Image (cartoon, rainbow, N blue to C red):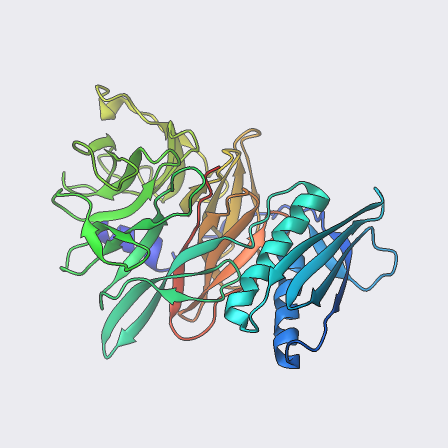
Length: 423
């Protein structure tokens, strides 16, 4: 029954309740921006048109700007190609600021050159708004298909807009809940954790992003689920039923990808099943799901000392508006926890403000929305939304609400995990 609970919470929509909630309207702070583009004849028309689509997508989804046809926009981005290189002239009319950046070489191959477009968008965010862009980030996710009658889910990695998808694992089995291992300062991630059913029983594996060949992280018995690495890369939290109940554990860990010592159980409930842990940025707290009081809800707690009795641990309830809430994700700046909650019959993304201790509904509309994942800027989110067993990944930000679909093609896409940035 406990394994069935885990399946229902994370792999299928829950049964709706009759709670009535009033969504809090999101505030838009998008500013109008004038877009222009000029190019020489160095590249063919179809390439230039495709490159412009990338540039426009970035400007409309960076959470700061929105392309406008108005002549009196306070900001402008004038892109141009000269001598086979991409430039942009960023203008802030209020501050009378004009900055030209770029000189990024183009190849004429969109899959390569879209990265150059993303770099310029992030530069615009920094110059005009002193905000870190996320266009150069990538994310992990899973794609599930049926091979005959056998369900198979593999881990993929793609650009933040869903382009350039690359299959990472090749296990011909179910691989779920991938999570990047935070890299050393100034480096890009090179490994990730995930759960694989390659030997029938779900176990946690660690793999290189280069070849996707996974090795068991733990020698622990029992089913293992939902691993996540702390931002400091010193612990892994996960769920395991070695003691007969699906409980919350932490495992000391180092940046080289090695488990140190033995895992430690930090929370259990006699009549409850735990799931989906997420660390606070300082690694001292953890958010998770438990149905210890009946329906699954989101809780948070301090990670107890090694000599503490887990029976004395009293987690704090986070999700109070709705009875069925799952998949919490703590923002990198520690200010918010995103989660999925059944709302008038449909699972929606909600946000818990850690300072005010208030919740508000972010998304609306049809389709069960689950597994929110924060971008490094603690402003953008990804989530998967499913209609009639067709699940896709969506991108949004906290002032937008309902997102834009960024994945396509066959298979059910779930469990997005943003690339962490360590500065």
